[in-house]
Length: 138
Image 1: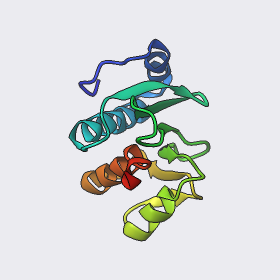
Image 2: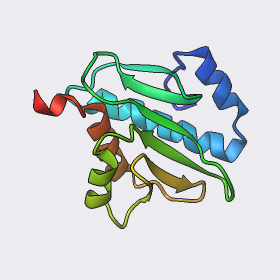
Image 3: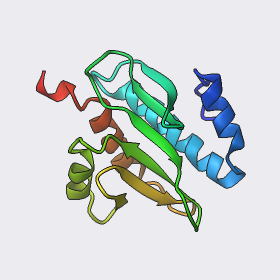
Image 4: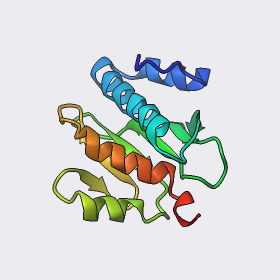
């Protein structure tokens, strides 16, 4: 596990159902979300739940950030993604900031192969932007 106990038994059960290499990568991503939230001023405590059947993380305080979801991607080869709300400007900002570092799916996700090296610092920055998305105007 990532060092962060599961807050929701449904999320824990979903993680148990992922095949090993994919589960390991998603657990790393989950841990990165929690670690980033703990370091980012304004993000606060996270709520862990299922939204659209996907593990989802959002600040406990309303109107601070937008939900970050993670899940396996459909198709072959096996992959996974970090999803944000498609009506935010987040993915366009990610694309402008890190055009050669990540692969993107439309305006809703950063996608990874299980074999990809995670660019931790850049991904933390993307997660931090999502978890404080609504707070930037305060």
